Amino acid sequence: MKDGLAGKLKAGRTAPCHYEGKYFTLGESWLRKDCFHCTCLHPVGVGCCDTSQHPIDFPAECEVHQEAGTCQFSLVQKSDPRLPCKGGGPDLEWGSANTPVPGAPAPHSS
Image (cartoon, rainbow, N blue to C red):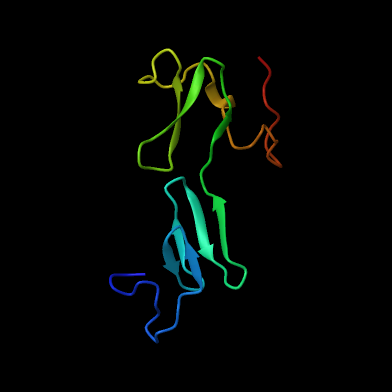
């Protein structure tokens, strides 16, 4: 809700969802700082789900780095986080748990 409305709709009714100190109208959506997308689902309440893709299969010498102020992730070297991860090639997987994609060629072996 915008300035001065303090959780009230134009007709003077109270907004149906109160979440983390803010009021939202039915169907209104927002993105939390932790990359969860939330929607006011009155009378159920507020529903939130993670919208980011986290890398899960990558070399042990690498780690996941979240870009400051965004929902973007990258893989960097543990020894020097300024450098991108190397050695994974095309086998790096993003949120798939290595689940094969239907119709995709079988992964190559090393």
